Image (cartoon, rainbow, N blue to C red; front, side):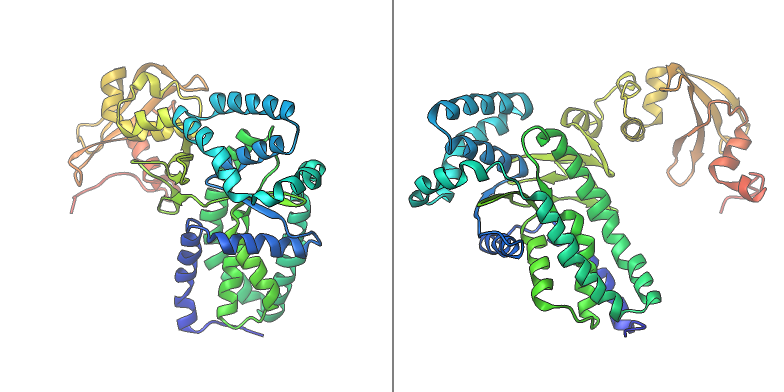
Length: 406
């Protein structure tokens, strides 16, 4: 039973967190990915499948649609091909449409050996509609993850297990599960839900990161199960599993800032074929809105028309209080002779989604030599009370009354 960590072991925790954050965007090894899928199918009691690799989840889905047409007669092929073109035009940007349409046939045929085609027409005519996603989840969860977790719990005392959960597992969760997996899963589900069921493996990164570290400090696992779980999670970030065939995807490049998906210059999540998602401090934005905000070309009127509250708040932060006040106009609700105490201002003619006015504490920040704007409740009318709330002095019953700035 392991009861405590050495100083060296504890110092390794940040390294293991960073290791698994980096692995989330490390390119897959195609040979290892194909082997990992085959090994997992074998563990599920299924025959080794043919593995088709797409450059993104969307590309993998399109390859699956094309393959479905490939194993049907020519009439159905033409019908589905037309549907595919319509779906591409409606749901993907023009650049990606053109790129994918020109590459679909070559990608699919280059990955399928010509000698297998006639055999596949017969064997996969039915099985291509028999997905294994629930069986795969069951195997990953009940047969692998749970067994590894039981081994871990039997070798770590409760106090150490709790400590590692807080220091390692929770931090991996905050980035790889709450940020990456949930955001990506949500967007992919909205785009692919009517086409196919898929499985995204980033959900497991915090688990395998924990088990990887546990193995380092001396926890003994069943090596075969540990390696199968680990290789599958690393090499297969996305999969559409069927009997006899599986469609998987390459990994994206991922950009972070302070544990949140973020980039002001490009997509925060970007796949090799150009598909990706834009984020600012963990908040998702459609490309056009993201571009307007990051280039500061969005107007105050456009900012306040943003329906999503998180996006609107982030846009307000980017555009800045000065621009908002200048474009919308404002009236002073309260002020103080000492400019560092600031003013309470209200923007003219602009209401939030609840019908309330936008009021801000406008205070001078000597360190920046500029004004800062902090939104306050719409009924705030006393600048000193606003300062106390903004600095949270009211919690300690302290009045805002600086005597001297140092």
